[in-house]
Length: 59
Image (tube, rainbow, N blue to C red; front, side, top):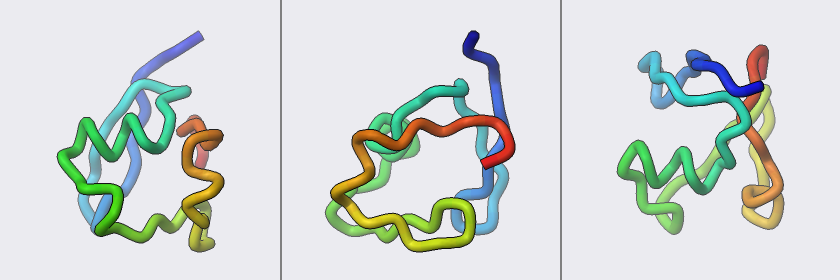
């Protein structure tokens, strides 16, 4: 079941639908994936894992 969740992006609260993939989220927010680093649950997430990472509640 997908539902709206809140997350922090560059210190600002954003929202997305749960189970959104990380590349989809970056695109929705207007970020160029080649120019960003992603911290996910307190750790830097390597690009090789971006496509398999789904944003979920409590992440």
